Length: 252
Image (tube, rainbow, N blue to C red; front, side):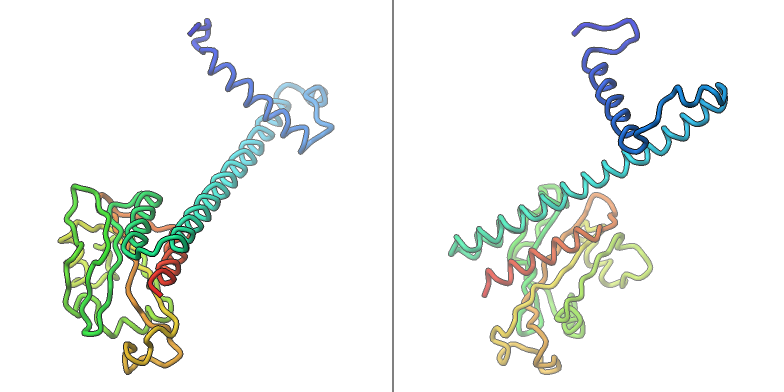
């Protein structure tokens, strides 16, 4: 590719030209009567300061628009994922396939290291019935854990829609027993949302201490970050809740 004397190639020149045109269009939109000539009577020093201020606010506007585009793109992708899984649930009669597809899509979309569905059993124990995990981390699939891993006193809060986003399992408000348990699987951050069923075998399976109007806690949809700590975004929590709802539909 041809190089220019200032060290820019043709692609860089085109990017500069496009950026310049964009700035000019913003100036015309925000200040339709503006012209550099209008600053001439105030002297060079004032003109430079004024142009600097204009450039600063234009950069803020560019940044705001770029952020808005990112948010819109994320929202579109989230809706696409939820709709895709919902359609798969409607079209498939194979529950195991639906659950496997869900955890796989979630892991790829959120770029986490492990996603699993944790089934809670009537005797208080729990099992990882579906899992996708990167090869370098320990598999949990098929493991059954005692009631102490997820005590029944936690059930009512999650039955009412409680979620838990832990950015760092080493932080002060994380129970020592929980931190020790998840660290054996390499977990540094985790996100947990409930999978709830409305009135499904409620009389048989509902804990005797749980009010009759409370949904039945079937299990948990869990995401693990193992390579680093992670602050979970609100949209990530909302996405997990929406997908947990789809899982609940699939198992009905």
